[in-house]
Image (tube, rainbow, N blue to C red; front, side, top):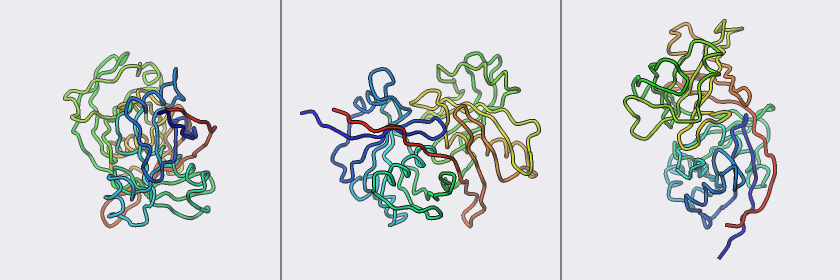
Length: 292
C-alpha cells in the first residue's frame, strides 16, 4: 500500500537534502526508495536524504542517548545512492533548521542543541548567521594513499583524515588545476580505503593567512553521492590537512571556499584533544508530499 510522506528540501552552501519527520521510527524506507527520492531526474533530487527520528525510536540512537541523554533527535542520514553514512556536517545544520521550522524543537539564537548521529552526538549552536557545530575530535587516519583523478595530470599523495567519517585530502598547485579536475568519476586511491572515503582537492590561498585566518579553496567527491557543491566534514578535513602541512605557526581559524559558498572552520582545544567547529548557513527551500 502506498504511503504519503511530507518532506522539506533544504541545503547548506549548496549541499542539498530531502528531509522528513518520522518521530517514532515507523516509516523507514528501503535503500532503493531513498535513492529514487534523491535522484535528480525522477525524484526530488538531493545529495542525501535525512530522516528525523527520536533517538529512543531507533537502534542507532541508543549510543547517542548513552553519550548525552539530551540528544532527543537522531539524524538518520543516507547518501544519494541509498547507502548509510555516519554523518554530514552541512546536513546537521540543515537538520537543525528543519527541526525548528517543523516545530519539533525550540532553539533561540545563542542556545545549543545536541543531535544524535552515527558518528556520535554533535552539539549545534544557533548563531545570528546560521549554525556552528562542534564536530568533535579530528585525527590523522588512513595514511597517505596515492590519488588519481580524471584530468589530474599526475597522481598525487593524499592525507587521510577522520572527522567521524573518512576523508583523503589532496593538495593541487593552482586554481586552474583544481578547476580542470573531472570529478564525474570517483578518484582512485592506492591503496583503496576499506570503507571508501570522501576525497577533497584543495588549493591554499595566496597568501595563505589574512588577518589571522587561513584561506583555502576546495572541491570534493563524496562517496555515495559524487561531486557535491559543498561538504561540511570535507571542509573540516581540508582545513586540518592544510593546517597540518603548514606546521606549528598555522592559524586555528579557516575560511573554506567551496563551489556552493563559504564555510568557517575553527579549532578549539578541549581536555580530550582538538575539537573542530564548523559554521555556515542552513536554508529550507520548499515543501512537498511524496508517495512511496
